[in-house]
Image 1 (tube, rainbow, N blue to C red):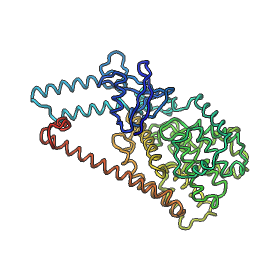
Image 2: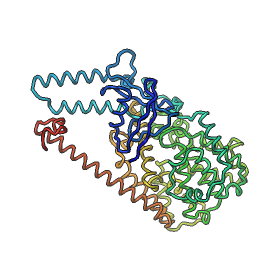
Image 3: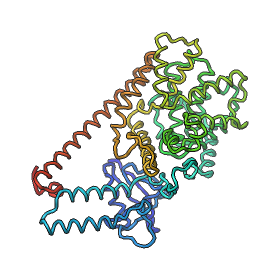
Image 4: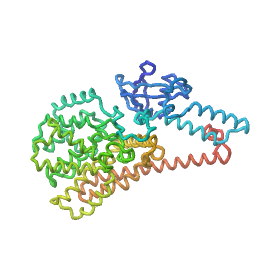
Length: 525
């Protein structure tokens, strides 16, 4: 059985614990409680080295003795200056529990038994405590943000300095990147880099920069477009610095989209159908397509009336921002990988990148897909408009291609995406903004988020590409169909489990039996 060692500090003491692969969230919390000598009603808070709250769950990342987590205990019966998260939210959990205990005692004295409705209330209180006690998103919400005067017009991420990587961190990555650039990449790695099954979780940031560099070398961009190697290095490093530390739309996502685009280039043999400028446009667009993403989507930007929404008149504010950031970096002489292109080729790359990056706005999905379907049966690679639509389709496929990869690679990406969704919906609730149901942690599950998305978004898009390039069927489309089966089965299992729980709950109410009596085996159902 796999295990992982977690190092942490509590009350100034260095501690470490070993978790087994089958330990659930409650097992982990109990271990931390024991280490902290905390009571059952105490609230635990775990921080990473950046000072952000992180979730105590089986997904907790293994660390080292040099990157210890910090464990803090907040007593449920604390006094003095409010320090708990619930205090910042305006709740007095201690008072709520005491009132419930008094009510429970009074009902018991008056009636000789505890009605099931009281047990329901206790369960809801415990569930609410759990949400406040161990969720990573709270560090992202800006709980200390003053929202009493309405929604701020300033972009939310300006107030969240932790979204930016530190200069020290960036410098370490760059130094390692430069050292590794002197090493020759093996043919085995170069071949693996072309596979749709590529696993990003095995590579660190410096290594991914090297792999991106290799794409430009192996596709011949360095020689064909006269890109100086120091300029390519500085450009890639500047790109890296301008991706934020958000759960999903980060540098790793940038790399994975570029890697899938690179893989499609070899799988479909795009160089035999498109010219070098088009392929340079595709790879460069993929790398730049989410630059400086704040972790909150266009709906939030527009509803919160952020600076980006005002600047771009509510029209694809994020995608316009990503594109502007890309060319802002290219304006720096030491980063301009396009500086040796002839004027007409530069204009083609710029126009193509703008179209590709703006195409990643999912609000335009149906429009772009319909345009492609209308021309696919008579597709002409010499037609400029046909090629333009194809480039948009290709970057869209690469952008949402996680389900193409093996489940052990794809599922952690879904966890990252849901975390980013939940961060946003939690903030929207705090600010009184509309909340999309598919982003609400109280309404969505992992399978429910994927079944519809795969069925109505991914498969129609990928199958449309397959109608032009049948080669993508086994390596791109078939894995997505298997992912749909996987999440459909998971959804059915969750629904069956929910029905069983509801059946037990209904029986206990009908017979006047408490859920606690059932769980303790005092009655048979």
